[in-house]
Figure 1 (spheres, rainbow, N blue to C red):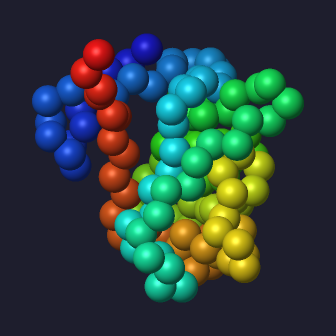
Figure 2 (tube, rainbow, N blue to C red):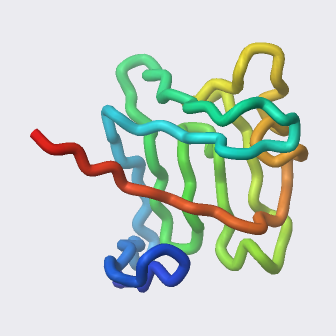
Length: 127
């Protein structure tokens, strides 16, 4: 795996990206997406992971993808996302949109979008 500096957050920890053609889903029992701000003005909320028939599709890793979450690529941020409109949302495969909201436009206001800002966090809990 290639180490990449996490330029936009703290520049302290490397991100891991699979090299070559390696792709896989990573499971995290406590994962979630959080909508801090959205185009439909729903208050900040946590979109919990819905387990799909015992399979866990938390994070998808692929060498030529940006951050990708969920089994149906519920939230996909493309490589070089600020220069193309390939990023998209398609909630409902792993993470559910709030009741009454359209799954493919809830987070960004449109299915395909150019993100102005994306933040990913890793939650550390003390035992």
